Amino acid sequence: MEDDLVLRPDRRAPGELESAVLAALWGASGPRTPTEVQRDLGDTLAYSTVATILARLHAKALVARTKLGRSYVYTPVADEPGVAARRMHRVLNARPDRDAVLARFVSDLSPADELLLRGLLEDD
Image (tube, rainbow, N blue to C red; front, side, top):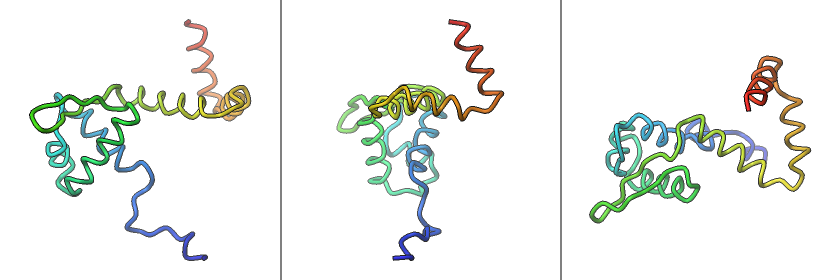
């Protein structure tokens, strides 16, 4: 049982592959096929792995896909800060007590982040 708690050195952190695929899409000059994304990542992942990650990102509404022949091409729907904001909204929306989650989040901000947030709220 104790072995279950030990992280395997060959295992990637959760979300690491999705982040790598998104980074490849952000760095591209336009829509990419799974084969192109695989190549952009240095062919370190199997095609099926890249295709699965792209399908998951599409299901999460983080990438758009368009049919091109018998395949799809993928485009990110937001830049990196936009994706992070979407993830934060998803977590917030999944909790029954939004007020408590938001209050805890704000109370844990660094003084610099708190000033930044205050400035952003005042600009609205």
